[in-house]
Image 1 (cartoon, rainbow, N blue to C red):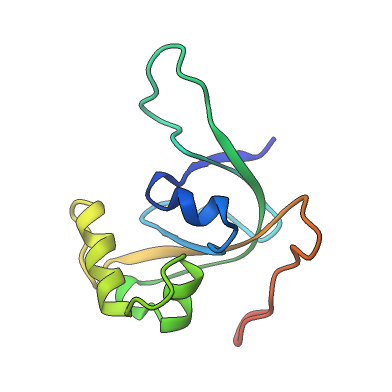
Image 2 (image 1 turned 135 degrees about the horizontal axis):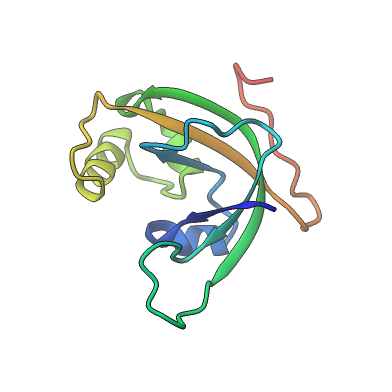
Length: 127
């Protein structure tokens, strides 16, 4: 059974299938081939509040890196085309208390399942 991952901050990008990368302060045990169900909200739902499942994905790559190592291409893959890496670092730190630009985060790349043409694109430096 796939693990659940909340994507409330980037729900629109996930629904549009423009987000293929995410950064998390945890999620250290993921590996390529793991499956995730992306949801609006996972923790903190009220009693009876339904789980809004948005998309099923397969993890393509996982690595740990400093938050401020994000590239312009990854800012786009995070769902923010036209924004700068500096903007993304400020956004991420403002939504993750205690996170600093130098904080090591987990970079997770996925491909969407159940869609024609959903195969992940090869990225330089990744198998």
